[in-house]
Amino acid sequence: MTVTDGPWTARLAVRLDTPRLADWLERALRPEASREVPRTRAEVLRTGESAIEVAITARDVGALRAALNTYLGWIHLSLETARTAAASGTPPGP
Image 1 (cartoon, rainbow, N blue to C red):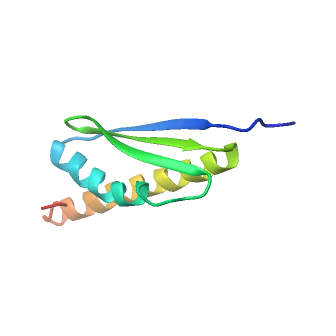
Image 2: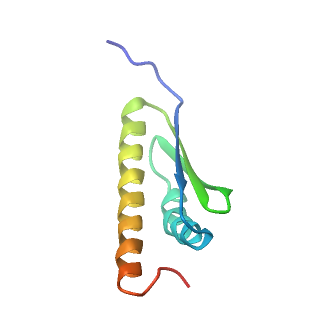
């Protein structure tokens, strides 16, 4: 099987309960998206008051898979951190 060269693209849409949580997640992910990563580019977009999107472009399918796994992990970790903080009475963000 031969997989053609890219660009390969994916978008992760995240809808959150509050604008504050969307702000916090956006600020958590934006520094990661601004880093130069070989074969991959990512952009964090605000798509609504309580929604963000991570747009990923990669030169090959392996790079896209790696970026997707990485961003899904960061999103999961960030949201679990926010849930834990809220449960302790300390919501995330300023």
